[in-house]
Amino acid sequence: QFILNSAESNAESNGGGIYSRDGGDLTVTDCFFIGNSATTWGGGLFLGPSLGTTITNCSFERNSAFDGAGAALVGDPDAPSSPLISNSRFLGNGNPNSLGGLGGGVLLFNGNPTFMNCVFSGNSGFAGGGLYVQTGSIFFTTAPRVTNCTFSQNHVSLSGGGIYNGGADSFLENCILWGNTDRDGVGEAAQFRAAGRGHRS
Image (cartoon, rainbow, N blue to C red; front, side, top):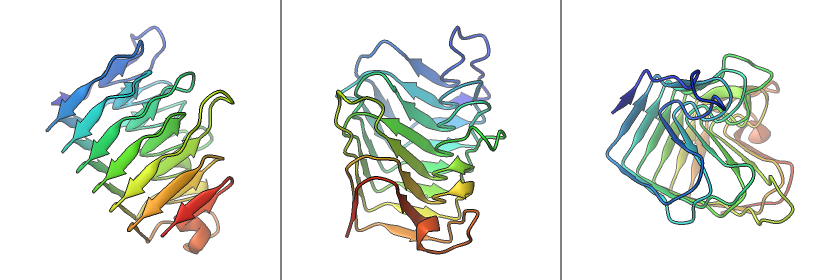
């Protein structure tokens, strides 16, 4: 269990629960990340360059990233990170700074991560309440796959209450998005906002 940890003493103020900056594949199973905080990115977990990380049956609850993004989990903006995240929950994570919170639950840059059988609920921020996907570099392809996941009751002050796709090739399959809100209410754009290319089925 990773509970009430803070990244304030970390040189980069990232990764309140776990800070994996220099890469290496992690295996994280049956873990709780609760009430952790970071000044910048990844209140629960900061994941550096990684192609084989697996996160299974974990719960990220009430984590925060005060001035940055990815309250629960963030992928490295400078290198590809393509974890497999399954059977995990992102609940009530958020960013108290409404102007900085991209990805109240998860912020992803680069790589081809896969989410399977996950729940994103009650997360909040500026854009992308449950999940914010962004291409961080022209040198890497970003194409997350999100399958059998539920996004509900997430809220942002700008757009994309459930998911915000900021320019990546993303694919949603057999997912439920409902009750997510943004500044325009609870319409389709509040559930899934695609600034770039997005595919749903």
